[in-house]
Length: 278
Image (cartoon, rainbow, N blue to C red):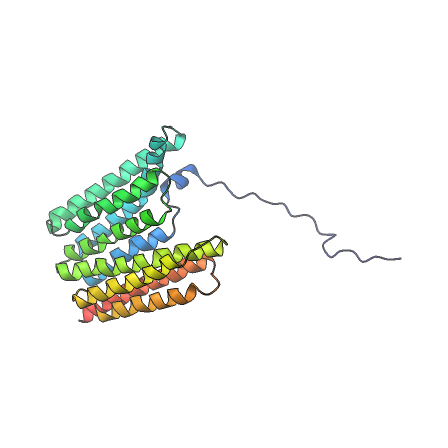
């Protein structure tokens, strides 16, 4: 009597290769929050599209340096808070110091080129950055308050870039307004969707309220003459899509991140295009 062999019976077992461990330098130097790249790049892009200048571009590079410095600075502060000294501690402190020194040099060059008209929004955002770092130091940076504080703080770079390029205060503050509305609506929505994807309890009242707040902020900016109508319409469209998505099966976090990036870039282009054509 013959038997049918399993189709995989004669195949040689494949060797499983363990994933390569992440290098210590990369783990210390590179941010783990992929969404932070977009939240840092959007204000820089918006400010440069509205009022391009060399000083604004230098401020954009400075924003990137500040974003990169956050990861090693956070690790150094966490180790300091927990009274420990690991091999990564010195590396993190040296990297953070080097990147912050680079940031200081860029700000000095901008100050020599463009005076002081651009630095007030950065000073105003320091308390928000301080709140984020306080939570980071205690390893609680993934909570809603520090995430919102960090996003609102980094959005101030749009005002600084636009002011360095000669834009008016009204227009520059309007850029902060639209980015603030975008973050207030997007961050609670994304958090809820990720929690739903992981089958964790995710109250929807907060994300729903956040969409309403985002639309109200955008409407106030338009009524004050700081934002074009197209920006308000874009914010309202995203709010409607978010409310609809909260009642649909959640998508993978990677797809969610891509959709957030697309909306952020679209909002930047709509806002900048409308202001340039006005």
